[in-house]
Length: 156
Image 1 (cartoon, rainbow, N blue to C red):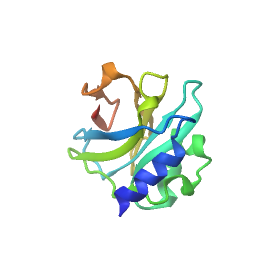
Image 2 (cartoon, helix red, strand yellow; image 1 turned 90 degrees about the vertical axis):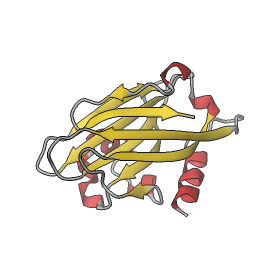
Image 3 (cartoon, rainbow, N blue to C red; image 1 turned 45 degrees about the vertical axis):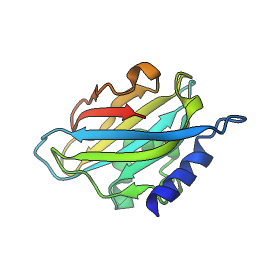
């Protein structure tokens, strides 16, 4: 049910006018062994001008902590409706989060960027932990994180 809701949310939030072709895209976020509690993660996309285009996934179930995902929080104004139906549990150190979502083909090689924000209890927040242009060249290539995320890989 959650994957259906996520696909519906993505198809409405990230649809490029006139282009409705989408395909399953897998996002694998491998966490580093940072020695703390489970991380809250926000995966979201910005358009070529850097404006918020939509949320892909939010890992971590307590909305009161979403403010610590400061890049996502600033982009959405903390609007939890942006992630209604596309949330899951926090992700532990050394573990991986793998999600597959329908994403519009037109988002690739068109200037859109994936952002991953991370926050861990009693540790510094990490906005823009990973910033990865959505390009064909980046598909399948692990992008390194800065603090809590070891890498993010986007693939078809």
